[in-house]
Structures are given as C-alpha cells and as structure tokens.
Length: 348
Ligand SMILES: C[S@@+](CC[C@H](N)C(=O)[O-])C[C@H]1O[C@@H](n2cnc3c(N)ncnc32)[C@H](O)[C@@H]1O
Image 1 (tube, rainbow, N blue to C red):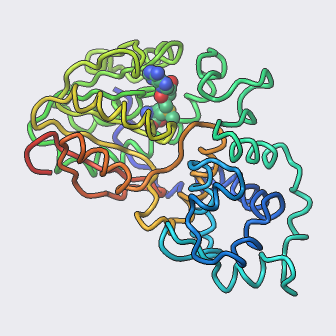
Image 2: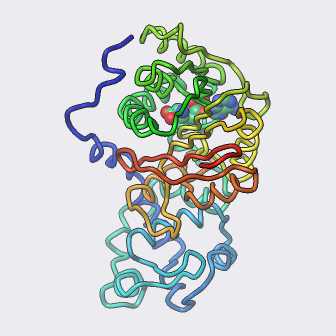
C-alpha cells in the first residue's frame, strides 16, 4: 500500500485550494451588478423573496439561490434567506446613483465568457460550457470523454488525498463494527483508498461510470489495494446499488439539482444495511446561507459547470428525514470541507 495514504501533509493547503475554488465568484457578482443591476432593484424592493427576485429577472431558482448566497456571504445583502434586503455596504457601493457606486470598476469583466456563461445559467438553469472542451459539451457530458475524464479525475484526486485523510480521521468514532463501504461516484477511488488505509477492517467498492472506472482501477492498483478495493462499473442513476454498511457520497450531490439529489439519496436508503451509515462529504453552506465565503464562492463555480451547487445541512437533512434517516451532526474537516452523517434507522 502507498505509504502516503495515511499521512497528512506538513502544511495546510487550504489557501491554495481557495484560490481555485473562488476563481469565478467575482464574475458572478459582475453579472448581478452589471447585467441584472440587482442591487439597484433591491434598493427599491427591500425584504423581497428569492422567488420574487427570480421571477422579476426571469432567472431560475438554483442559480438565483447561489447568487444570493454569495451576495449574503460577501455582506451585500442580509436577512432571512427568504427575505432579501441590502446591507449598508450594498446600498452605498452597489446601487446606481449612489456617489460611492462601484459598478464602473467591474466594467472590464462585463463581457468575459464566464460572465456570459453565468447569464446563460441564470436564465436557463442549465450548466455552462466554459470549462469543458471547445466542442461545447457540458461537464457531465465531457466526463464521458476519456481525455477530459482523465484530466478532471486527476484534479479531484489531487485534493482528495488531503481531504481523504481528514475524512478518514474524523469518521473514526462513527464507523463502529461496520466493514463494507460503497463509494458512489468515487472518482479515482482516493477516498476508499485512504479510508481503507486508515481503517484496515474496511473493504470498499467504488461505483463509477465508464470511462472513469478505468482510471479508478489503475489508481487502486497503483496503491496496491486491489485486494481491498473493488470497482463496480455502473450508472448510479440507472442501476441498483449493492448493499453496504457504509455509503459514501463524496462531492457527488453538489453536481446535481434537487430531483437528482433526492433520487441518489433514495438509492442510498435502499442500498444501506439496517443501522447503516451514510456519509455525505462535501463543501456545505451554513443553514442561514450566510457563508462560509469560501463555500459560497465554490458554489458559484459549481453552479456554472454542473447542475448543482453547495447545499446546506438543512436542505439535505430535510430529504434524509423524509426518507427515514436519523440525521447526525455536520462535521468540519479541512479546507472548508466537511461531512454530514445519517443512520438508517437507529440513533444518529
Ligand atoms: C465531482 S466527482 C467526485 C469524485 C469523488 N467522489 C471525489 O470526491 O473526488 C463526481 C463523480 O461522479 C461520477 N458520476 C457522474 N455521473 C455518474 C453516473 N451516472 N454514474 C456513476 N458515476 C457518475 C463522475 O464520473 C465523477 O467521478
């Protein structure tokens, strides 16, 4: 087994990861400021609901939520997530007609491809194409292309090594006697590999689609873990999942909108053994949608390339409770990531 699978790096990579995660946040603000003139409208309509904002601007619910969460995290708007009002800073600097209006400062980014992409996402609710290849495919479709899948899986694998260590450590008190782990949409299998490295009693199955499954197999072989980690080639939406005592959904739900999230959680409920443990490892927005800033920024990136966003523990907890799970606490791990756990029946 690779020695580094259960070692932490000596320094914290959080700041470096933040740089990439925040890459498009400024452009989402520029879109709101220069294309929607959102803040001037909010000045005239204080306490408005996010549904009314979406209706007024002809934009969809998911990207509206991500945009407003980012504005709240930056301190431009405040109040209950469903009653949006400007803060003094938003009123002073983002409203046309204010002597301190900073709109002109953003004009150089008004027509970048990313801003154009955000406008499309806001209006259609569909993910943009900017990060996929020039053939105009979205991220999900691009992941079916071997070369794109290789590059993107390497991207996720590079952060997964650190995140996996932290997850493996923080999960220790929750594992109990459970021995089987199903890692759905497991990418390179790095979370299964780190979990098995830290907890020798575990055996893992990584469920992945083609062509990523080929990469998963070769990564697991590179770590010398073929005896402990198997790969199941399957479509997580279309195929039943094998029974398991632990199910891990790591950075999977954030790729999808609510109907798909619900479907995946239903599949998890069906496949989990009685008293099974569901672990949702991701970047989580706080329940009041006030941040953290780094996660609100990352959610802007996800909204642009995928059909998802970063969810709150309450949003996912609501679905889990409906499905009969007992929802546990949110646990922070590293670099603004964390996990929510839930038990099928029994106590959390
Ligand atoms: C954002 S990545 C997360 C990978 C890994 N779990 C991690 O945390 O780094 C989402 C993964 O879901 C996989 N995926 C997407 N649609 C899928 C499907 N229909 N069936 C199986 N896997 C799928 C992708 O191939 C990709 O590896």
